[in-house]
Length: 151
Image (cartoon, rainbow, N blue to C red; front, side, top):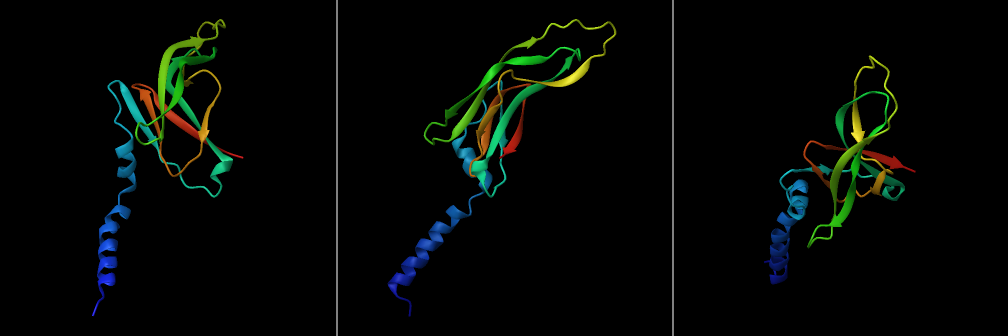
């Protein structure tokens, strides 16, 4: 005969099991809002590393553009970190401004070159954390690329 304690313990385990079986992708989606009109939400799920404190993630925002192949071209803009309200998780919002270029004279007949033109400035590095996705909101027409740096 089962004691009341065994029955109670079984009921608690049975009720708690669905919480552990939650889909990995859907739990983070509850915290991060959908992209607003004119924006695209990029989500990066980082693989687990043995030593995550020795790694950083570089966020690279840009766009494929035709350039003259001679001048250095960048986009104006910035990446800003904020917290998801009610959750405290980090999110990154990108604003893009007008482009800028050096003014080196281009030789006649110089062919155009397609290049990934990025935001100007220092690399934007964030802490490596495989427990949470990296969620970046980027204006439509631009894309997010990233690099993982290890010490």
